[in-house]
Each structure stands twice: as C-alpha cells, then as structure tokens.
Length: 437
Ligand SMILES: [Zn+2]
Image 1 (spheres, rainbow, N blue to C red):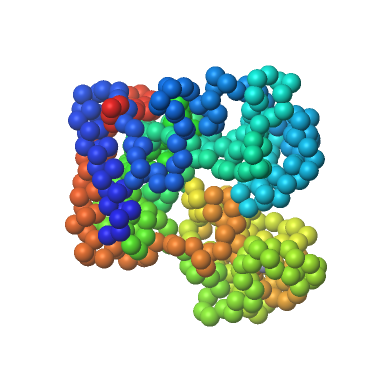
Image 2: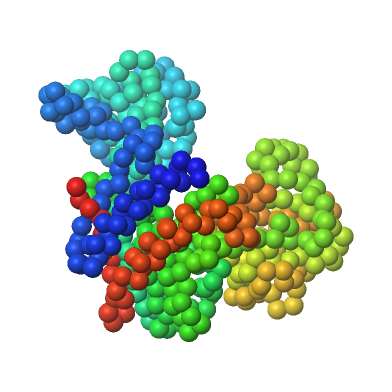
C-alpha cells in the first residue's frame, strides 16, 4: 500500500471513529483535518507570532492599505496596474514572468482582486492579488524585483453527511433542501455501476458521507465522496472510497470497482487509430495548429459505431464541422461524443437510454473530414480529455492482498452510513461531523 493511501486511511479513520461516536449522540461538531500530511504543499497564511500581528495575503494589516474590487468586463490588468503607479516597463516584465506561474491572460472578469498599498489609495501599488477561486490566490508583487506566486489557502476539511428521499427528481430533492448539486455528481459516480440514475423513482432513498472544504467558516468547495448508499425497489447499494496501487475510487462491498468501465474504442474489432488526441496538431484541412481533442478511428463507410458505456443520448444532430454526431452522458463525470457519422442508428435521439456496446450510428465522413472515420471525443467534468491516457478502474476486483485493508475501511464507512438517520418527510439533512479540537 502506498504511503498516501495509508495517510488517507488514517485521516478517514480518525474522522469516522470520532464521527461514529458523535452521530449516535446527535452532536454537531467539527473536525479539522488540516495537517502537514494532508495538505503537503500549503503555504500557510503568515502569522507573526512575535508581534502577534495579523497578516492578509502575507502583508501586515496594520501597516498596509487594501483595496478590494472585482475585475470588470474589458478591464485589463495592465491598465489597473499603470493606474496605480506601476510603470509600463514593470507591467511588461510582470506579464512575461507570470506566463509560467499564472498568466495574466487567465484573469477573468467578475473575479475578486486586491491592491496592496503602503498607506492610502493614492500610494503606488505594492502588490496586486488575484483570486481565481476561493481556494487560492496569486500575488503579483512589485516590492523588489517583480515576482509572481500562487498561494494555496489553508482550509479545513470537514466530513459531512446528508440523507434524503426522492419526491420528484434527485436534482429537485437535493436543490430544494439546499444541498450542493455537486454532491449528486459525486454520488452518481460512487454508485454508477449499481444504480441507474436515469431511472430514479419517487420513494428512493439515499445517504452520503463526503468532505467539504471551508475557509473562515465558509464552505468553498466539495472534497471527496467517502461513502454512498442508495435504496430503490431493486435493493440496497453501498459504495466506499478507497485508494490502492491499481486505482483510486469507489468499490462495492465485495471490493469490485463501482465505477463504469468504458470500451477502449467505439469501433468493434481492431479499428486503426488515424489521429490521436493532440493539443498542438496541424489540422489536415485548415493547415494551421488547431488542437485535436479527440481520437480518430478510421473504418469503412457504414461500420457500426458503439456506445462505449451505458448512458443517455443528449444530442443526435448535425453541425458544419462535426457533421452528423451523437453525444451521450454516462454519469455525473463522463460524456462521450461520436463525430462524422454517415447516419444515426434507428431510434437514436436525445433522451434515449443505450447500453454499452449498442450501435448508435454508422461511420461516415460528414462535416469536416477527409475520409470515413469516427472522431471519438471523451469528456470528463465537461472538459475534453485523452481517453487513452485516462486511468479507468480495472474491471476485476482489487488484488486479494488488498482486501483486508479495504474491508476495514468498508466496515467503518458502512457502519457510519447505517447510523445516518433517514431524514424525515422528504427532508435532507446535512450535518457536520467530527471534532473541533
Ligand atoms: Zn478527430
């Protein structure tokens, strides 16, 4: 077992042991899991112990002036900086230096920034702080030579739980109760192989245990799903998060990976890959560098194209570049797309459920294509990725010698899940569990 995996085990066990005691007593309690072994590369907010002064973004708050605002549409960082006393030369130097750290071109309208000054707003800026998300900030520092740094904020990882019963749809039930919709995605991932979330029914029940990140008492993002339970008319299903050398993710009670597995290719037999996923490809028709965000499988006209996993058709349509194409959603994380089809298979239209291996269309060269092939695109969390490089779970159970370690984890999580009460009449409860030491 790797050391990160044993760290995870220790942390989760620590949280769950305490949690198990507290849940029975219905205590609301907080557990901060921040620790050097949990967050290796955190650079903590500096607190000068000697003078007991407060620091914000590393600047002493007593002797600095902070101006906070949001980036406006069409507002350039260079302009903000020159307006605040930074010379064009230094702005140019900054832009160059920032390229490998946090490129100023990635600064987006609507995001928060801060100008740090010596005394008042009329002073020149000492630093420009940009917050791309609540978990990190970037310091563009002008005090000495120009310097750029990304700082990960210190956060508390809280283990939370929620339970509920479906009244209309899973989304409706969760959002009605103020549960972060991201929890649904995590739960769908955890239970993907045992529960069909396209067929949720009124009266289905669920329980989840997951992590949430907090900064200054405010929830900023979700962490991992640690355990999930679902009950429908077919039975009860559990899923437990576990890390081992083969795969990091969800397993069922017997130690089988609970995530979907995908066919390696949408073409049966040995299709030839004619072009790989490549972010810097020279486009064969357009003759300039255009990223190729898919994998091309060359095959004769009319060759069946298969769905690489169970899912629901979200698109079956035509566009100028893609030609006739199908897009499918497999779970909260994965979608796939199949381009340049000659025609769709019978009955393929949005909203239709298809099984892994089912024919969804036939190879063609519609749209921008030089010959018959299927351009296969793989989406993970709404971004296109190279599926050939993705570490998908193995189809087999985990190795036998991992099982004792897994069973220990499984039993703790399962005990926890079983102790979570079903929230009363359609109510979903979110409780913070753990310690506040
Ligand atoms: Zn392609």
